[in-house]
Length: 305
Image 1: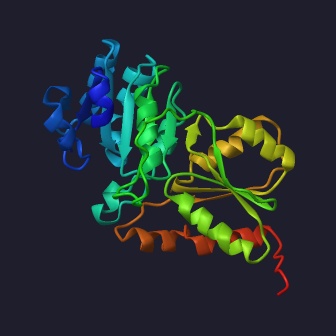
Image 2: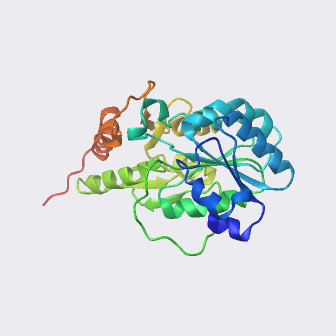
Image 3: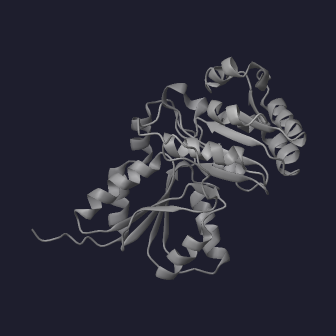
């Protein structure tokens, strides 16, 4: 954000009493006049961001997934209905570990993706995230949300030059002829690990980074339907109304009724406090459980020694 704001004077950051949690306190040190803390009032922050956008500024509201729920009405009426260029930086998207049960950020896809004019992106790592933030700040076609998890990233190499990412396009991270796993964010490493394990059994799984949740990559979805490979959607988010539901809706609306789609994600219950690794194991979102799910759908083809 600081790098972007140095080159773009329109950028203004907002927080609802979470400058430390969102790390916007670091932004405020360099740009004290372009950082607004409205206090514990997510509704007001959302409406204020809408007002700033009407004046040609680029407001970025950094907010925990679970707290944005408080501003839902304002997201609908003040931002999306007017199709304003507000960016929502959705922190703590997914399971949050030590932050506790109330902070599990598992509902934001479900409560945002059905709102007209909303665009939703989700980054698989910190390098993709910095490009995604740059893309979102420079997006001029309405509101846009960028999701990212709690944590410090994976320690991967960061590109020096920021670039715009194509919205509505997905990346094939690994090719495979037997099945496709459509996933994003924190579940990308889980899918890749499962695919490597399955390769040893002779099961070749394609892994797709579906980083644009809305709009989806409809070209790729049409291609997958025509190939008629089984599909697993994998998300660290609520299954009800989530990404997997969006994929099912696409195939239904386009009359691809023969496509097999299996969904893996957060079940219909509140997730209690616990370490992320333990919770993922309990709700069935580990690479081992992905392997077992694939094996239930695709026959084992153990290669001879």
